[in-house]
Length: 167
Image (cartoon, rainbow, N blue to C red; front, side, top):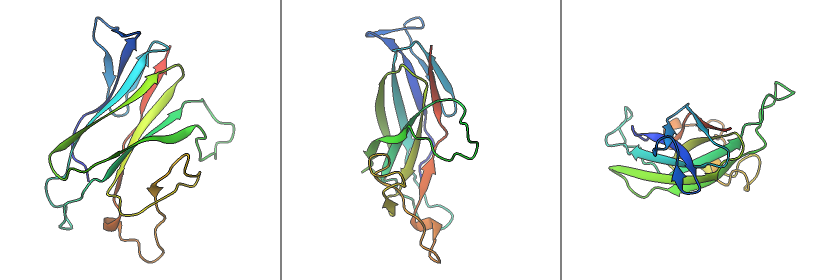
């Protein structure tokens, strides 16, 4: 659905000044950004939109990108836990372009506790309120209809998380 492009977290700003020799630090997919407690952190994302047909013969259209953010709280007592109670969708970007690229930016603010941020995107064909309610996930993926689960009618992507650890 979406092509190549950098996605990075940058940080190191505090009280309007950049640290690390006047340059902020940044990390890409799966990376960990170490910042001073209280430093401002920003997610910056460049997405190259699909410019050709996929193997089934159509060009996927990206309609929305969601920013999902959660706290890092440590190990859980029950290893079968499948929920992260302090995780929610914090920002949605509606995508109107159908070619070229889009640039998105989201300010995580001053970070005072460990957190992660990840992205998901969709063509917007099938969405539903998430299992934990609209306050947590107002328009997540809809359950597949039994016997009618054509994967090409409902496209989603999920990106690896980026971790932010203040010290």
